[in-house]
Amino acid sequence: MVKIVREGLVAGAAGGLVTSVYLMLVVEPILADALALEERGEGVQQELFSRGVQQAGGVIGTILYGMLLGVILAATVASVRDRLAGDDWQRSIRVAATGFVSVLLVPLLKYPPNPPGVGDPGTVGRRTALYLLFLAISVAAAWSGWRVARSRAARGASPRLATVSGVVAYVVVVGAGALLLPGSGNVVSLPAELLWRFRISSLGGSALLVSASASVLGWRLVRPSGALRTEATFDA
Image (tube, rainbow, N blue to C red; front, side, top):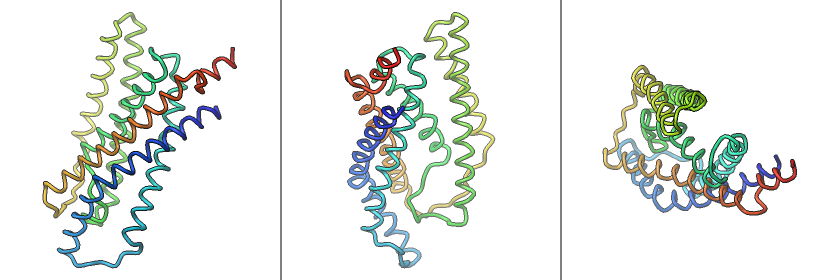
């Protein structure tokens, strides 16, 4: 287990480092424009930390977040290794893709993010609660879809039909949750073009973090000295 955690930490740190470079080059200019417009409309507010300190903290936070993500990803791959076909690189990509869709992509489609410091601060608590609730629904739906797919496969359904059944189950549950939950109620005064540039680039950063971490993890696991391979040999 220690080796699995180590591989996850290395993979997540690599993904976090790559993503932090992307955020600095792509997202930071958009964020600066958004903050400038917000300050122009409401007046300049004294910041507790300088922008440089905030950027350095963002880099460190992204790497730490990537390391946590890497550990979760590695542990998940290890736990489902005997249930997924292919090698460990393919398993890592599949697990990461499932997690990206259910944990990051779908919740953000319902409650898209705003630039930090932009928007009505009075709605932060409500927006956070709704986002976490829909996130829980999406994760539960993903688990339900996986159970449906396994059940259909156990009854003799083809792999493709079992997968389609699981996807349909996920879409039905998530769709019902999206229809029943209210909107965030947050009004943002930024231009729509700038706001969506931020949201799309932020989503791109999340996709980069997940894909880079999964790719590095898969590459490390398929090596002759990979953690899963080593532990399997040791257990034998």
